[in-house]
Amino acid sequence: MAKQAPGVRIDGLTVVYKTPAGELPAVRNVSMKLPAGTITGIVGESGSGKSTLAFSLLNAVQPPGRISAGSVEIDDLGDVVTFEGERLRKARGAHIGYVFQAAQNSLNPLKTVGKQLLDLGRSHGVDDLRGLVKDAKELLGRMGLDGARVLDSHQHELSGGMRQRVGIMLALVLNAHLVVLDEPTTALDMITQATILRIIREVHAERGLTTMVITHDIGVVAEVADRLAVMYGGRIVEQGPTRKVLADPQHPYTRGLIRAIPRLTGDIDEARALPGRPPTLATVPKEGCVFRERCPLRMDVCDTVDPEALSHGDRIIACHAVKVKELA
Ligand SMILES: Nc1ncnc2c1ncn2[C@@H]1O[C@H](COP(=O)(O)OP(=O)(O)OP(=O)(O)O)[C@@H](O)[C@H]1O
Ligand code: SF4
Ligand SMILES: [Mg+2]
View 1 (cartoon, rainbow, N blue to C red):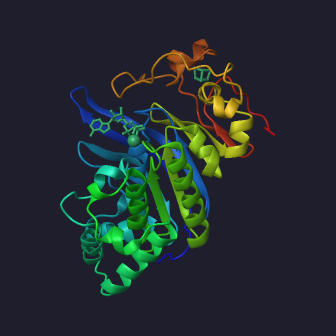
View 2 (view 1 turned 90 degrees about the vertical axis):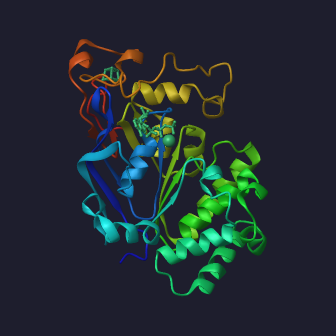
């Protein structure tokens, strides 16, 4: 079993939710790689399918959702989409650590952090619970917290930044080497956000992890991610090395996102919000390009043909207007 950073290959992944209008895809035909030892950022507006993609990595999509197609191959573990029962439960936690979106609220308000840690250890058959507590204290200390005090605390006694760090500790303490962080800095002030991002970078490097960071804030991925994938309406529309995607975005949606962030453009007067709203499950077009309602480059073909995700050097872009060429 993997005790070092695993690589992950997601291929043709589709996740649907049952709705009154039938089963509709929240993630559609997504293929991507998380190279071993890297941090990958997933960015997109609310409802683009980021959390659904994250749950798929643990084969933990809950009804009324289900993975309807595709695979998630994790090195030394296999295709987790085919896992079930005990095998799946063991893979979660021990191999794949997960920090829930709004970690602030995912702790049990009635139990101390220490009690929840012991529950986690027992549910994973950890014999050495003292060792587990020691590791938890060390991790919390590593993140600038008084471990003993935090373990004795209830959630309401901790600040938002402290709860985020507790979430990261719980994701790491069983020694997972694939870690998924869903909105780890949302709702934190800028200084706490910067601290959490620094901790994520350090822990990632020290423990030898493969990490996925999910955020709606492209500024966050700019700071931590080696690679970046941009989601829109359940599709990944552009992916590649973060530096290249930010410096020279190709997909019209990525361009719009970056233009809307003064921190990235460096010029507050130039920052322009992307007009329009993202689609919901019910309004995602059934055919053609998911982005066409908001796209300044829309052509006739975009209304009928869903653009294929094509490789352009080390980038993958799904847009009819981007011609295949070697990008710098
Ligand atoms: N249990 C559910 N039943 C029906 N639809 C759902 C369910 N969970 C999510 N969806 C829909 O699936 C789509 C993707 O949701 P998801 O939570 O993955 O998006 P997200 O990118 O994580 O959004 P956010 O930034 O708000 O967290 C949305 O349209 C959402 O309304
Ligand atoms: S495929 Fe067409 S509508 Fe979609 S992003 Fe490209 S140009 Fe715009
Ligand atoms: Mg989400």
